[in-house]
Amino acid sequence: MTGDQAAAAVGVTPGTLRRWVRERLIPQYRGEWSTPALSQARLVARLRERGHTLAEIRRAGEDGRLAFSHVADLFGVEEPVYTVADATRETGLDPQLVERIKLSLGLRDSRGLTKEELELLRYVAAVLDAGLPLEALLQLTRVYSQAVSQIADAEVRLVHLYVHEPLMRSGSSAAEMADELVELTGDLLPLASPMLDQLHRRMLGHFIEQDIVGHMEAELQSSAEAGRMRVAIAFADLAGYTRLTEEAGELHALDVVERFTEAVVATLPEDARMVKTIGDGVMIVGSDPAALAVWAVGFQRLHTDRPRPRIAVHYGYALYRDADYYGREVNIAARVAARAAGGEVLVTRPIVEASGSELEFERIAEVRLKGFKGPTEIFLARPRGERPPEVVS
Image 1 (cartoon, one colour):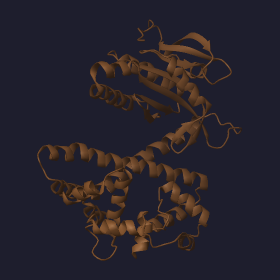
Image 2 (cartoon, rainbow, N blue to C red; image 1 turned 180 degrees about the vertical axis):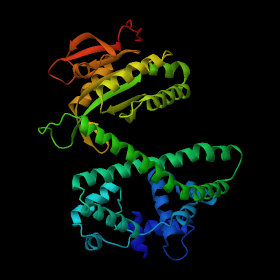
Image 3 (cartoon, rainbow, N blue to C red; image 1 turned 90 degrees about the horizontal axis):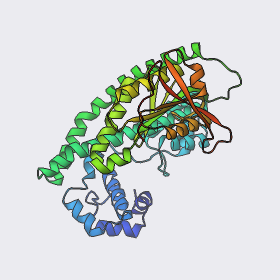
Image 4 (cartoon, rainbow, N blue to C red; image 1 turned 90 degrees about the vertical axis):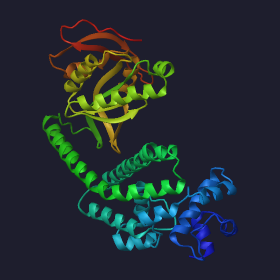
């Protein structure tokens, strides 16, 4: 690669790149632009964008804090060698679709594709050939990209918190820390793929089973739009969490949220799952509205310490996109949750109508939720025959 090509790849002028070489900011450069040298130059460019001076970057390099060559050696960083036209010929995908798939997979290098990235596109083409509709494929690739990005981010953050920081406190040098990171990553990397593969197989089997049961029990409506699913939706969070943060401190409050989230996951009905966390709250979906309502009431009885949860459950059609749920019914559930007090489970009319004899419901009001024209009936749910619970403002 010429100096001009390297500068274009890094996103700086050739003169700037030559100055970085003269200033000894790219120690991997030894007369030619190898992959480690180019990766180091990109790292310098990113640091410059964040406002670091050349002197600061040079000192960091001399101290071993920018030992990117270790990473390049470990992961075998590749340079793009294929164009979109090459990918089109190799996979049979049209150029526009190649660009869309690149974007959904997070492949943003405008210079082209590496060998590994071209292999990814071959897999995608094979999935399309197997019969998966394009819209479903694009959503699936986005979910894969987001999930794997979250996994990789967690791996790095946790190593930093539990390996790097103890090493720093023990007085280890930056070079020793880099060596420790490379050794640890080299040991863990071969274990990650089998772990993820086994977890994926187990969870995939679970959700296939749930989907079959759901199809058997669901009320099929041909008028439902494609991409919509009828689900029970719950939002749960901790009443008074902000006050707890001020009184007990952020670390204690975070511990409370982690225990709350773990308790949610551990107690959910088999057909339900936690879709996401939202600050101190969670969003849950399930196929059985009665079971989710019973879970919510039972969950409240397990939590007598403050801050107490507040929960709302609703039932309706939601739009499914990229492993998440959207639409009017989701918004209703969230709005109802905002009206609950600590210790309460609020539900809507569809939940009341779908529930069995385990619960009883007290009609509280017919309200106009923010953003909705029509009124919504809200009910307080509790075990049949039990006195109203104490609530927390």
